Image (tube, rainbow, N blue to C red):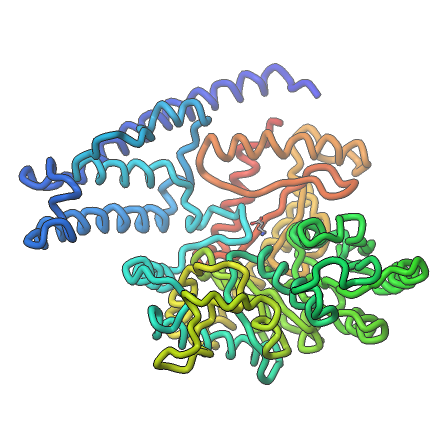
Length: 538
Ligand code: ABU
């Protein structure tokens, strides 16, 4: 649709002003980079002049690392300063010109490394900024970050107790506590590199439980076509399990969901019966607690009944919604029945605000993980070590090396206490309710797509020219076209980031996420006003 000429002129002027401001801003921050000046004697030194290469270099090492910490502290400061931008956006070609990304034959001096660090953060999106609403993982929890700094310094691998004794014990304590919160007594868990891999672990354990011969004999040990079920709103990693594990995506059956994005149990049962009548073997159902786009919760109890009836494994993908288990106010009915699951994915790096990445997978039955994945590598998992080798967790997983993702969560939990997490959950949910209320109050400018079950708020922004026009499928298409343009303006202005996407038949719409402890009601007000400032003329 063509814009009126006056709007086009206004928009061009506004873009020009934005560009000049961004250049001034950019130059100012270029000077900022220069402020990280090492002393003259240190600036031209190289990596060989610091530890461990030069044993007498503690003062120089300290000066270098202190300067890196100054840069990090400034980034933290800017992240929490609402007058600073969320991002300094440039297209990839321009960004390549702004950066020196070359990996050289001869190493550069310490001063250059400091400038490299400063420049890297200058152009990094501040995902902890109170006006960053773009991803499921928003925010910068400083205690968890302190944990990540310590983790980086300890630089260990989580496969054996012998090289990570304290961290392994922390894992045991934290994961046991999480299982207790799910509602289990006993069981087993592991931290995995992301929710998708956690879901894969669930799939592998389920198949192993039902067909223990698969591990040695492979495909031929299963006399029939395995089939899994999940809603059409699930995370794509569930379908990916079918592709990766030899079922084929045709055998990952998509179950229709209702208008609010929740799996319809009667449809699940119908599809299970249909596949059984073809001689297939239904064995695994994924139930999502907190879908990625709409934040919907599948009805666990009803799905659990069907799983029980047809002897299928019930996996709950609560990567997103798991955090609500802490909240007495919001846990029910969303997660009611989760204790009936055989496995649960739960990502602390999402709603709980733990630093990326921190993803957990839990099993009701103990011993399955090791039995399913154990390869007994003799060079790593010797059985005659001086300590109890059950603490060597590395053989429970399909990867070898495992990053230490526990310390940042353990430290954060120590700081907040379980009570603190509950308050955090309630705060995020109340802010989302506030946003929903504000959107409804400004129904001329915003159209709420559905009542949120979680912190995902789905809506369209309505520019001036479409206000008062009846809401029809044609209007929705028009509103959908506006999303990428308005998002582009947010990024160019650098003041705000909110995600958008299409979903099924619905054209593009905004999905706002409030998962950061930094966000207040005023930030929600800012977000709505800023969208209107940037988009009213579209
Ligand atoms: N793994 C889901 C993350 C998607 C998001 O942040 O929007």
